[in-house]
Image (cartoon, rainbow, N blue to C red; front, side, top):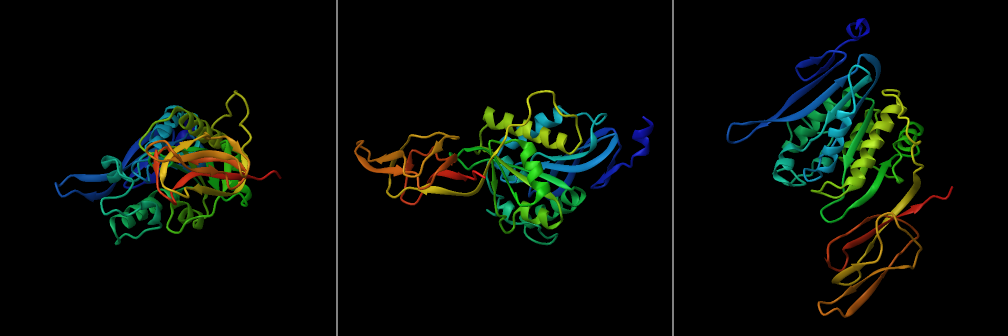
Length: 323
């Protein structure tokens, strides 16, 4: 207990969290037209022992609910009495979109294109600024949890700057089936956080508005393995982390005609360039066009939409780096 009292409390918003304790914090965002307040929910696990400060967030896109469950299970597995360092968990960043089941904010802005934000900008810009100042600025590592879009599930994967040694080490520790060297997008949380010096992993798995067991398990295990690699928790006694396949390029196979789609591949399948991966038919079942892989690699995303138009994304293939 003496060591707990010796460690400083953690300041966030207008509260302080004592070492060796967990505290839920509400960071004010805005007020509804009805007069109700909207706040950003944060849970801080401030360990007794010193160590890294890490954040984990989900639902920057309001319909990407799977990460909320991952964070719930991660928090249930941690104790502030044994944690070394501090975990700042934000299960729902886009609170208004989450309540409405929408990817976007009420003004149709994409929150993940609004970072680092501004205290006097749009609602999206203000939420981004709040997250950057109260969460990112206090942390050295971030885990940003996402899913695929509606009816477009993703294979569990980590997207990160694999040319940065520290980030790559954490990506390897996560142990997702695939880790993809991905460039950052303007206005994204990952871009803004990297510019502060934080190492950021973006996890993709499952699809919007659904809980899928496999990507949840992969996400929970991956987050806990990253915390173990940082020395914040003890390494589990189970099997070592899976070895992730590395990809530096990926691309979507797109429909060349409009039709009803019949896919012949699943997530995680390895396909050779030129292989038939599906077909398009008309409403009477007459074949309109076959669909072939345009590159060799692993299927990391696909569509479940039965009807596609010319140009629609069908299958996402990541080219594996044999080196």
